[in-house]
Amino acid sequence: MVADVENYPQFINLISALRITKKISETDFEAEAIVSYKMLRESFRSLIHVDRENKFIRVTKAEKGGAVKTLENTWKFHELSDGTTAVEFFVEVSLKAFPLNMLIKEKMAKASDVIMGAFERRAAKVCKPVKSGKLDLSAELSRLGLKV
Image 1 (cartoon, one colour):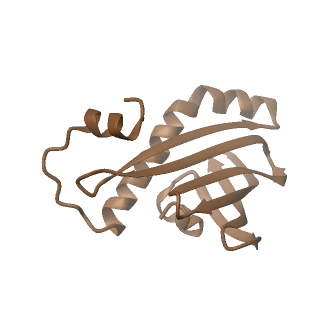
Image 2 (image 1 turned 90 degrees about the vertical axis):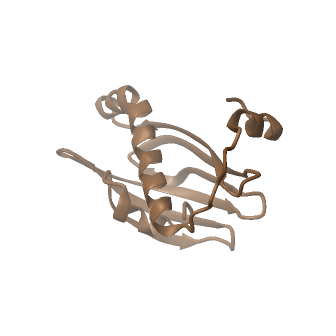
């Protein structure tokens, strides 16, 4: 679902359009997104690496990144003992336009929560639900070597 970037505009309000511009290999491709927020509209290109075997996705700025100065976004998926999945999500971005960069810095934590919430709602719609009993999440994260 995360690697299916062309569907992002269906469930992430900030992204008004997204298309794959170049397939580099079976695991790597370039995509262009148009992000719209109030009166602002910017496009940027990113490189996406999908490692299905290790359940890992990395997104970085493409060579001609557009409005993006730097971009580092990673997703790591960990299967839990009850069949559910814990997701490690990291994003750090800076924009070329100083005023927009200052705005995004202030809003980044909230934007990350909004984006993750959009993915959670999308997963609830498109993924098969797992009947889960009581899961000790702290113990699971500890077992995986992850911080709570």
